[in-house]
Amino acid sequence: MIPAYEDQVLVATIRDAIDKSENPENLYFAVAMQFDEVPYPDISEWKSNPNFKFLDYEVASRPGVMQLRNILAKHHKDQEYVLLCDSHMTFVDAWDTKLMEDYKILQSLQGEKVIISAQMGEDRRHLGDSYECNCHGGSGEAPHRITTWDKPEKIDNFDFLKGST
Image (cartoon, rainbow, N blue to C red):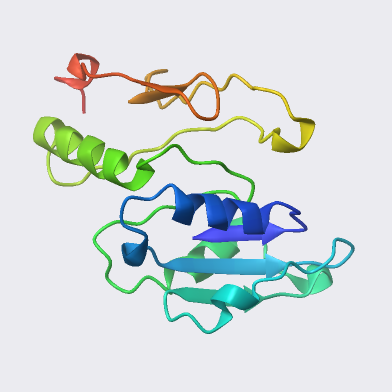
């Protein structure tokens, strides 16, 4: 699920998610498109793909981002996993497999209902530099720490989660 408001790197975000996925055939996208001053992106390569749903909104009368997320969630087709991300993200290689592995580890520690959440830093691809971004959850720690866009450090020890609720 991707809410996109006037974002010039939306197409790059979608391409990066697909290109760096180990199982791109299992990806489904619901994208809320809101473009006015920024040129409407070329999504023609995905428009007829059944794994994509694009919803168009007028910028002047668009719902807020929280309502858009709710609308996008209604397009969930009973997939086993759901990812909500911004329209200006980059992904690490095999991100889908890595997230599923982390999810299963967390389920073994915390039980069936698990949410992986992280606040990501600004996408600075357009600046051409490396950017340090630390993902963090409620405890201040997360399974991944991204030190550059293509070299994540994986935390293999989830002991900090044991015993917490």
